[in-house]
Every structure is written in structure tokens, then in C-alpha cells.
Image: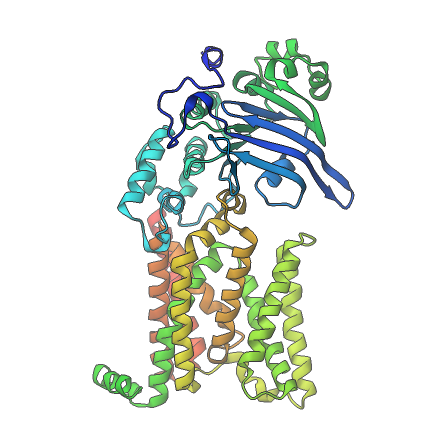
Amino acid sequence: MHNQEKASFSPYGDCTSCARAGCNCVDCKCSMKIQGLTVEKKDGYILKDVSLEVTHGEILAIIGRNGAGKSTLLKAILGRIPYTGTISYTSHKGEPIVRPKIGYVPQNLVFDRTSPVTVADFLCPNLSRFPVFLGHRKEALEKAGAILGKVGASCGLLKKRMGTLSGGELQRVLLAFALEPLPDLLLLDEPVSAMDRKGTEVFYDLVTSLRKEYHMPVLLVSHDLAHVEQFATSAALLDQTVLLSGPVETVMSSPLVEEVFGIPKRKREQNGNHL
Amino acid sequence: MEIIYNWMDWLLPFEWAEFTFMKHALLAVLLVTPLFGLVGTMVVNNRMSFFSDALGHSALTGIALGVLMGVDNYLLSMLGFSLLFALLMSGVMGSGLSSADTIIGVFSSTGLALGIVLLSSQGGFAKYSGYLVGDILTVGTEEILLLAGVLVLVILLWVLLFNRMFLTGMNPDLAASKGISVRLTEKLFVVIVAVLVTISIKWVGILIINSLLVLPAAAARNIARSMRAYHVYSVGISMISGVTGLILSYYLGTAAGGTIVLTAAAFFFVTFAAARLRKS
């Protein structure tokens, strides 16, 4: 089913109802471009001259061994560490975006689970300027409920405390958090590591359909090659720099990937697509 | 002030409220406790309770510097030093060279020891030992106005910046993804805590100021299930313990600061028991 989805999806839009105001879906130009990104620490380079581009409709997977610099790349994109080089964003009209909004879905949200924070408390700062410690505006709550519905969660979650959510529920809430305000880039960091197989498929189906509706480039960091093959449209092999990038089939069947991950493609398939 | 005194005489026809110093103390408590309740929730949420403790300790060095420079009002020297101290401490913590609790421990003891050394070199530490336990009965009119100003300012900042600080405390990466300047927000919060601790240290005392910041929020956390409830309970518990502690201290003849903290501690244990009962 997923392969069908991928085949029928043309990168220049087959949607009729983009959620972005004024977006002409046929020639949407939204993209994110990294040029010459370098991160240096005392004992050497963590990332050196990384260049990547994710365009409209694309799901670019970053793969690489542990310590290849995947999480450093994420931190740089989020602006949490200093770097040299440029990261630039282009809107659907082809104009540069100065202050991009990033929809970031982390691997597992590190937060204090005993904290008295409800899902509504967590989502509403994105939807309204009304300070959360005074409560919530009705409009913001309705909006939060609608977004939860969009990511396949019930709006009954709003009253639940963040610390009591299951892995799957938390991941949906994080996706809902990422989607508002509309992001210029969706950044997924091992988004399904806390989910079972079924939850994983539902999550990726959701991302695929959201990508059509919102028209944003998607960057996926994953060590699960099976997921990458199934859901990404292109891939880049990272080890301090980009060793290889291109359409997902090309990258996945290259001997380099085989070398880094140590398992030939045929074997991976035999093992039920899981590493 | 006269109008307020008359109101208080009419509202509070009790023995303890007859004295002007008690009226001042009550006003100060009513102004400072909501501040502690409000800011304390974020101190506890961001796991900064030892950070604010170290800030309290550094006030002693601030006083010593004031003495050395020969100023009468130590507020400015304390404020200056604790701001410097707070930013330095959070800068060292941001470097990631040592774990946060180690760095706070180092700064906390340095701030306290430096204060003791400097003050004792000026001919006797005993003169300043009052700062250790504080005395709320010495609050004057000017200081009440200062507290009122700070209360208004903090409420204003909270309305404008709370969401940002909340998300930053929850997860800095997520906050950064929404375009929030994490570093600036963290520094701003540190400055607010430093100012709050410094202006109230004279009346609450170096030894217990942190309890007043942490206890109401910790008690509220036991029973709250949302951010609004958390803040309502925290401010409520802070104000009730403040007023109750002050009145109790009058009749028991004990130090007001300590009595207030003990009342807040009682709230903590009661809410803790309530939470345990609800769970089982």
C-alpha cells in the first residue's frame, strides 16, 4: 500500500486543497537547502562541508552509523549549536524565508513526567498568545482539538497530563505540536522508536498525507533502513560529510550503504526488513 | 499609606494588627508571597531549586562588597553582585564541562565563604548575622513600594513571556524549533530570580529564602494536574502560609521567616499525603 502511495505521488503536487493560503500547488517551490555546513569542536570536525537540499514533496532520509553526526546536524538545523555554512529556506512562492518555522518531532521527548502539564497546556502556546498559567482560550482549545484530530488522536487527550501518555499518544501529540504554526520544514528524528509496528505504519502514512496537504519538505533521521526504504523518497548517507545522496532506491542499493551497515540488501529483506 | 493603615485597622480589628510594624510586615508578606508562588513554579519545573539557593548564598558577598565600598544601602551592591553571579553560574553551566549540581555546589559555597571572609575582615561577622535569618518586622514604607513595583513588573513579564519560558523549560530543542531564543529566555529567567531573591533577602534571610521559593510550588505540584491549577495552588499556598506564619510568629514570639517556611512545609506534607491517598 505504501509503495502504491509513493508511486502515485508526483513531487509537483496532486493535491487540490493545500492548507497554505495562496499556495499554488502545481509549482510549489518550498525547499530547504544546506550549503557547506561545518561544525567543529576542539578535537576535530563533527560535520564537514555538508550540503543537502530537500524540496517540495520530498522526504529525505539521513542515514548513517552511530556517531556519524546525525544529531549534530539536527541541532544545527534547530540553531542550538554554532556552525559555519548556510541553511536557507524558500517559501512556496520561491521567496526566501528569513525566520523559518520548523516542525520538530524528537525521538523521545525528554521532559519531567511528574510535571502538571496537560496536553492542552503543551499545545496552546503555539496557538494563542494567552499565557498558559492563566488557563486557555476557548478558540485555542478548539484549534488544539482539531489538530489532534488531524494526527489521528482524540481531543479527549487535551485534558490528560503529558506524563501519562503512552508512547504512541505522545508521538501524535508531538506531531500535532510540530504542525502548528505551519512549519517550513518537518524534521523527524527517529520518530517511531517508541512505537510498535502498526503504530509505525500509521505514523508514516500520516506524515505522507500531511506532506501532500501542507506542502513542506520533510527531513527524516533514522537508523531503520527498512522504514527509510519504505517511506522516504530520497536518502543521504552521512558520515561527517554527505558520502552519497540521491533517490532512495539508488542510495539503498549502493555498496557503500552495505559497507556502513554491514548487511547486504538481500539479507535485510530476508530478516523481515528490520535491522 | 495613611489610607491603607485606616483600612487595615477597620478590616483587622486584632491585637497583632495594631502595631505599624505588623501592618508593614503584613503588606510586605501580601506582596512578596504571590511573587514567590508565581516564580517558584518555574524554578521547580526547570529543576533550578539549588540554583536559587546558591543565589541566596551569594547575597552575603553582595553585602560584604557593599560594606567595603562604604554604601549604606546594600541593596544595590547585592543586586549587582547576584546578577553577575547568576549569569556567570549559568554561563559555566552552559559550557557543559561539569554537571549542573557540581557547578551550583561550587558557586554556592564560594558565594557564602567569600561573604564570610570579607565581612569578618571588616571587624566581626556578628553585626551582619541578622541577614542569615532575616527580619520582616523591619520593612519600611519605601521597601513596600519597591516590592509593589516588582510585583507589577513580574506579573507583566509573566503575561508576556510565560509561554516562551514554559516551552524552554519543558524542552529547549522544541522551544528552539518554534523560533524561541532559548539562551536569551534562560538568562532572562535567571535575572528575574536573582532580582527577586535579592530584594527579599533582608526580610526572609539567606538561610531560608529558597524554601519560600520552592515549598509552595512543590506543595502545589503534589495536587495540581494542569498549569493553571499549579499556579493557583502555588500562589494560594504561598500567600496563606505567609499570612498564617506572620500571625503565628507574633503570638509565639518566633522569627517570622522561619515560621512562614514551617507553615509552607506543613502544606507540603499535607498535599503529599493527599496525593498518596488519591493514588492508592
